[in-house]
Amino acid sequence: MRTIIEPFRIKSVEPLHHTTPAQRQEILERAGYNLFLIDAANTLIDLLTDSGTSAMSTEQWAALMRGDESYAGSESYYRLKRAVEDLTGFRHVIPTHQGRAAERILFTCLCRRGHVVPNNTHFDTTRANIEFTGAEALDLPLEEARDTQSRLPFKGGMDAAALERVIAEHGRERIPLVMLTVTNNSGGGQPVSLANIEAVSGVARRHGIPFYLDACRFAENAWFIHQKEAGYQEWPPLEIAKKMFSLADGCTFSAKKDAFANIGGLLCTNDDSLARQEKDLLILTEGFPTYGGLAGRDLEAIAVGLQEVLHPDYLEYRIASTGYLGRHIADHGVPIVEPPGGHAIYIDAGRMLPHIPKEQFPAQSLAVELYRHAGVRSVEIGSVMFGSHARNELLRLAIPRRVYTQSHIDYVVEAILEINARKQELRGYEITAQPEFLRHFSCQFRAL
Ligand code: F0G
Image (cartoon, rainbow, N blue to C red):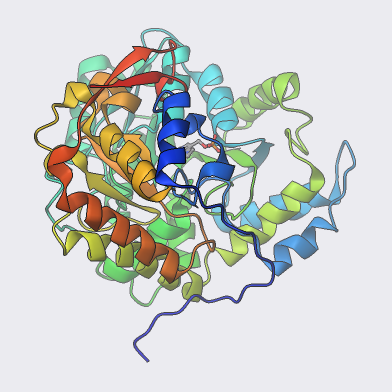
């Protein structure tokens, strides 16, 4: 059979909420055209993020009942620790309430003013948490990723030669760690090859610099390697994931992505003295090291999710369904970051709307129009989110895991193609108010 089906059936459903275009115009005006400020109840299909929005499985819901809510040394913690150790091999497994809490603790321990942290591409909270320590967050994407239209299989990696140059220029003492984000979220959800992970790990280790994975979407990355990297077709995703982790000294992880959990994160390391410092900080703001800001039941959901996410039937469906959205809009003339990534499709709004200059946020304009036209919420990943660090003006359509069916996606395709047919009508925006950090979450816009 050629048809790839959803590898699940549905046991519990949630109604969707319809609104009219006139209502949505009013809602947009009230929200200052910032889609983060729109209520979920006024969103028909929510592609704002794939984070924390997954549908949990029957096994995960069942595991919640096993949650041991003891303050210290709970059974649930040890179940999670075993699941993470089996997968990653890391010696210290520190739960946190979500990925950015792991980032904050790691960077607080390692970074200070004058330091530089290289990454293939930092995501928003990662960059902000590094900059908050006074250090510099430096993106070193592959040169070939610059062209959004080239269909190379592994455009998410880091330029290892550029990393060598950065180390030579700044000196090893000013680089407290090197990070690699898998998959590369701000770079179009593009995967990183094992060859690239090996190369970057090799450079970092040769210079004695700790190498960390930002492992939010490790399973999707492993599936791309299984499908497209020479030599790995016979490797199950679990073995590929293990190999990815074996090349690193630690990781940060948001369990809200490739663990199907609605909340949770992890900070892992092989460094005993660093782990002690991290646990001290953890107690200060997150909680005791055997729960780290989570309920025991959350730890259970993550432990189960980490195993489910590596199932080949799930990953085949996941990557095929993201590709389905990508191909159906790109093959009808909407420029996307090619090839389709793992968790999301990124429309190249700079290319789609060349009449809107980047200072007027073309991807924000498209996000607003997609909401106004069809009630679909997406997110700008461009100059609003990253200011001068933005390489492209992208609109991300992130796909929650196991949540929407093919007909929901067909509706999204139809909406995008209708907007594409009258794209000349779209106009730019300007920002009228913004906070100091992470402005995209709360800034206000005015339509031009
Ligand atoms: N790293 C990456 C690559 C991410 O995509 C995210 C979150 C984080 C770290 C932080 O994790 O949300 O659990 O604190 N990305 C979400 C997104 C929010 O929409 O892409 P968190």
